[in-house]
Image (cartoon, rainbow, N blue to C red; front, top):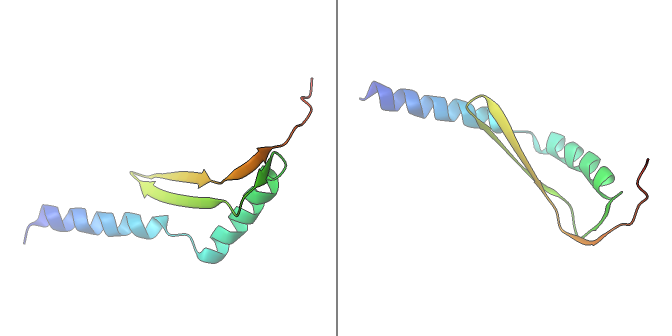
Length: 76
């Protein structure tokens, strides 16, 4: 067995485990994001979120489709 390959595989598995967010928690986060996003856009469906843990950092990608950008006043 190659110890370097085994170490890399174990590290990869551990990192993948850290990137997992329970579906319940993910739904709560997406509900919060949806409420805020809907202040600025008319959404077409629910937002989607992807979370990847890589080299000790979480990369979070949020995507959504909107049919309109809402007009709002700019605060001075």
